[in-house]
View 1 (cartoon, rainbow over the protein chains, first blue to last red):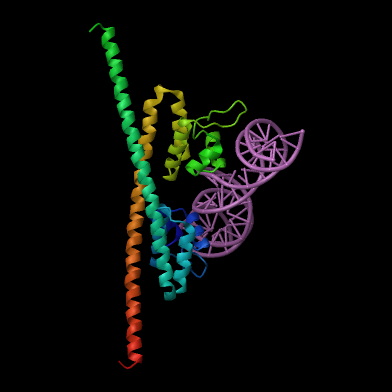
View 2 (view 1 turned 90 degrees about the horizontal axis):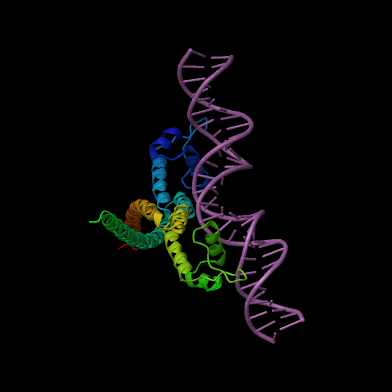
Length: 133
Length: 133
DNA sequence: CCTTGACTTAGAGCCGGGTTCAGGTTATAT
DNA sequence: ATATAACCTGAACCCGGCTCTAAGTCAAGG
């Protein structure tokens, strides 16, 4: 697959795809003899994985280290797992913070609803009074 | 309260507190006659709110607009509520993405556990063979 | 062959969100 | 009274994560 196709498939800009490869967020992509990127399944898999991880805010640093270890082979299994476990912890704690914020937003929105209902009733009362009801 | 106290209380740097005020993320903080910030309860409340929202990744832009509307008074109730509802949507969808990523991390970690158990068994077998068991 | 358009690289630029700095004023302790 | 610590401002700087530019190479159609 060309970079254009991959870009379309995963909705990631070509620039970003090249950037990810350059910094080692994905392993080197195979090339044609003339040097043009020719993404195979494995490369696509990496792209897809990194899209998912980045969307969730996992730091590029940790992901680069993971890819680096991966390329060193089986001796790094444990180290790789440790990175994943570590990032999972961080992800969970970010999600907990977000949940707090979400609860708070929900409460605030409820308050707004209440206040706005009250304001409306008040207007209705005034209107009725004006009409002498 | 001085900026130093507020900084300590909410664990936000003084620089960040000034920066938040400067960009309008919190309304102007009351001052002493000599111009030194003297945080009252309301200001502390804003600081605390923004700390929570920022931790959750709510964009500064939206929060600034919210504060701006707030300072314009009751006529902006509905607009403010709309901002909150909107940000809630975004927050929820980010959390959903994170959940996907979390599921994926969990599956990957399980795979590593499995692979590592297998590798270990293999080593044990080799050892037994070597000892002629 | 030549154009056109997709591809390549290295490096500069941009944006969000702070953080640091320079140069000054105010408050507090001796 | 004076040192020194805390505060002030505006502007410059930094970092992560892209995004764009320049200058060139390659592939396919007319």
